[in-house]
Length: 565
Image 1 (cartoon, rainbow, N blue to C red):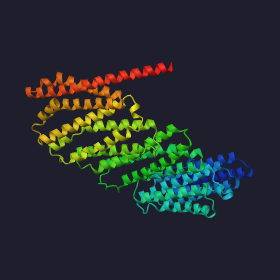
Image 2: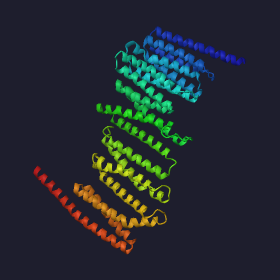
Image 3: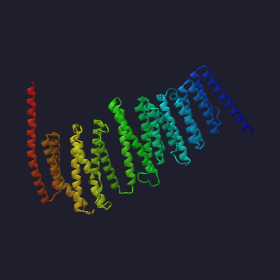
């Protein structure tokens, strides 16, 4: 007992001495007008609790001391306008507060959060009260003190299960809206008004989001990122854009962690109105808002094209996966074929919408080509890997679901007829080849599925039907498609289509002669050769026209060269 008193006495004595030294240093700094001396004094003041700590946590005593120290800092800043002093105090105070919040979530800490908010909000407005101007660091402090306080206060309410979570963002929003209204009354709808209004609206948005039980960190960061970009647009201070580009990847990372709750959550989440998807909606809204702002920026400047393109990809990815994961989760009780089919259909529609809105979204030519490549490969994956035949035959799903499967033809035809011709994709070396491949696969596989469904609904003779289709009907389908490609190439003067058509015809002939004929009966063999003979005659006629067309092209080029000479 005696030793404890000695320790307590020595700690209190050391603390009083440290406080006295700190106060004396601050006084001397003010007396001799030395900002360097007060910075060192402030470091000593904030580090003093650590140096004299005995390992016993007395947070009330600690933050009473820190609050008094911050009040002294605030007075000094208003007298001497030493901004660095306030920033150092803010960093130390935030570290102490967050450490207390995590180690011991206590209702008492709410009082100190509010006191800290008032002190540093007043610190941020020091220039505003004197000159009615907000510097870029003042605006940054306003953003940081509002959102850092919200994170701590809402976290405490969430852990202690207090309601409503929206009380603090709503209260802070009213404070900022008051100053925005003050600017509006003075008819000064300029930068100050935009900053206060932007922060106020952001906090109101956050209050609504938290009321719907969205995830705290993801929601706060998403809204704060949009606010930083908005303030950059209004003030043209690049520091806010830098902070935006630093913060937005953290938003995506936090959102990815939020998505894992689809797996880890033991309770069944409701459709749309669940914490995970509602958080995703906040991020989606933030992405759309940011895209609109950056679209306006891209018209003015083009010095950060790489960052903007990367940002757009992240935005599109966040929106795409947010809806996709919700769709998969809500369909998780369905058959695997149903889940995969709906996922592919959603992917086709989403990517097609991006291509349709390419001008509104300011999508670059390279990104547009990348989206078309991705969409075509998605079609190939869906067409070739769909297990719908097996699922229908084994009675896992109904045959009527096949009509839903065929919906992919709508975005596919729109892509081929409308979107690709209006792009620069066909100038790519693999452009015509990839589009032709998708068309060939889609026709071949869907005719195969229709053939199976029309001849059998049981798994007994499925292997025979597959073999029969591959040997007899597939060569005919490919031969017809090759003729169609050659005809389209001749009609539109596209040599790539002619090459692809003749290439497919060659593959068909090789397949027929080296494999199929040895598997056919006599009647099928005769029918196949007759049909193939007719197709070859048509192809030879087309080939002659193709040669004539090439000859005319060569002659025209030679004549034009002679004229130039």
